[in-house]
Image 1 (tube, one colour):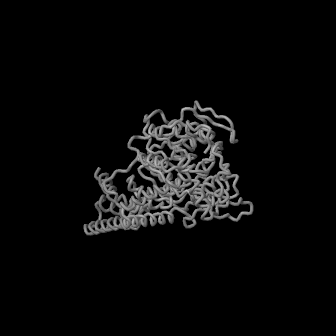
Image 2 (cartoon, helix red, strand yellow):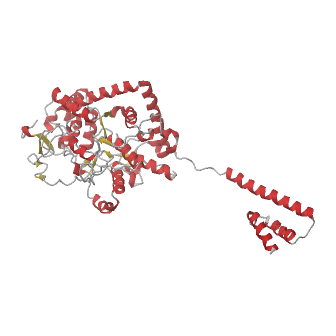
Image 3 (spheres, rainbow, N blue to C red):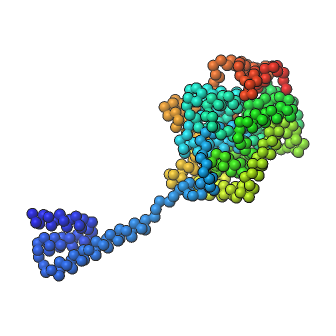
Length: 509
């Protein structure tokens, strides 16, 4: 029994030595101690030697551990991700963004997608890829909608023609509304390039300059998709883009927008817009840092069979004609540009300059980590991963980004979110919110590429019950929708893709 106890005691003490050369010493110890052999001085010396060996082994383990490099922290978890302090405010999580066309709105939507995705918020997603556009928005266009505020939706931002009463059925009462505008001349250039093959008014013109010289020669308000060719901002805000311009009517529209939208960004001052937005919604800096998405290639790629992009050259006289043709848009742009700079005055120009510089440095840092080719947009065919490759349509090439190789998993997920195109991101969020329905939907999506969504053409949502569609794209074709009202309460009657007020039925402007 005594020998067994000796064996157990010393086995526990020198267990770590069994796989080392000290194992021989261990056997000697058993022979000396448990067999009670050898002089006392040898016993003491051996115990001292074992103690030193054990301590050396323990210190060696600690030393080796100290030489192990800790896993590198993701750049997205660095202190720079938060940006300058926002004080004690709480982040807004109920957001409605009116995604206007050709205003860098796809980049803004990506920010909303990322923030909601990271915080597991619920999106008011369309049944297809648009919320019923170009018809005025109807709440039943939202996937999963079950009645006014039956489900809490946090973020709404896909293309729609704004219709306030219907939006309020979906979004909570504390929702923060914002949108973005752009100089109508620059907007017309982009719209002409993207929708040259879609809008009949643009299709007939050889170049934008020819269209600008005599827009009425090319424009027929009754033809489908011609809304892209006149007062597109005004149209997206849900207003009558074919009305005769007057300052009184323009001020009414401006007042209606101001009562609803707490912030209107300006595309030409995108970085300053992001700083104002960040402080308005109380989000960290990384939430508003972005890479430009859905950008078009400015020059031909050099391929022999590539179609030449549309001629967008304009004289100063033609630019002025476009402002007159898009008079409502020009009015809105001037009004909200003025308000925008008043907000910057309140914010402080020095403070704004400092925060814009931080935002730009952060964008450069993230581009260095996330993107190949120095962060420059590349043609879609160079992007190997189809999940981040932008869809192509029309005569212009849509650029995207190639992801840097060798990224750790956390960094890669965040980088992919920043460059994932709008269409693919919507599908990801859709499958996340509706996992059971995603399998069937995926089979149907290959058949949905026909109608314009910010430069990509996808099939329209099917008409709602009670809507009768007749005719086609011809001048005489009509599509009627009964009971629709503008969001100021005026009754609207639909003539193909153009809605006019009921008391002006049949009159073309």
